[in-house]
Length: 315
Image 1 (cartoon, helix red, strand yellow):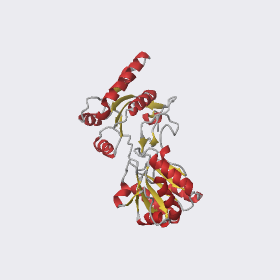
Image 2 (cartoon, rainbow, N blue to C red):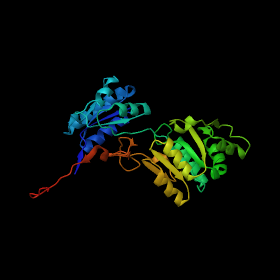
Image 3 (cartoon, rainbow, N blue to C red):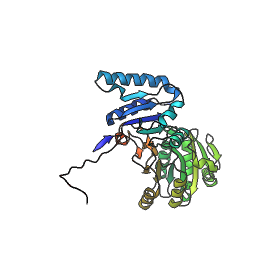
Image 4 (spheres, helix red, strand yellow):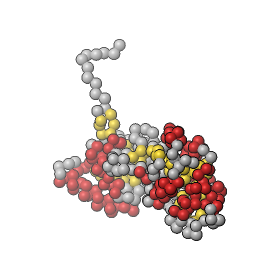
């Protein structure tokens, strides 16, 4: 049977909507939750938790099922991470530094969320007009989130068709950091990049960077195999996409890319609990244990095996 994990704690940054979402999910799953948000949203979190407790009390619920660590001290995090016997699982949700601190120092089980260095691979058979729209959406619609695209990998045979149109679509909206071939392809059609386009030379560090900004790295690849190799080296196992009309390329990409969510001909921005039909989410898990991808109610439950006998013994 499915049973609640028990007492969960979530350590998160900035966004106070996480307070309401995670408190509701934990209560629905039958868990208690200790919320630890950032100092920048402390007063908002205090008000939210007061409201949650008042609502639980008024409705006959368990008021103490939700609690807020609200001293504002960073020492709270270390206390939570060492609370064996009191906390059954801790979930970090935020930037790379926070997640690494939790993973490296926790003495209680961690359900790890992760940063999103997400890629879109444009195959040689891709619909170029559609590709431009998908890339623009994945980068521009909300660049400061973990499912926004950070790098576009372009098949060498798609460069000349894609890059001038992509540059025009992103001119004045996002900075492009291109390798030599993709930069040349932008200028080949007209002899110059669009006037409003911020165009820079890519460096090796760009391939491993989650920009969380209006910045997009572009790299040329010779094959689907090379794209997969690049993604599995630099990706964070979050969300990856291939744009293609080649079924074999799509199947290869889906089978070989190591990520929680792999898309064919769609924006990476769909990696979200609400979009997946889970309602609110705890975060996006990039680990391989227990929960992976958008985490809803099931991420806060585990299994109990119930065995009935009539006197059996093991020989």
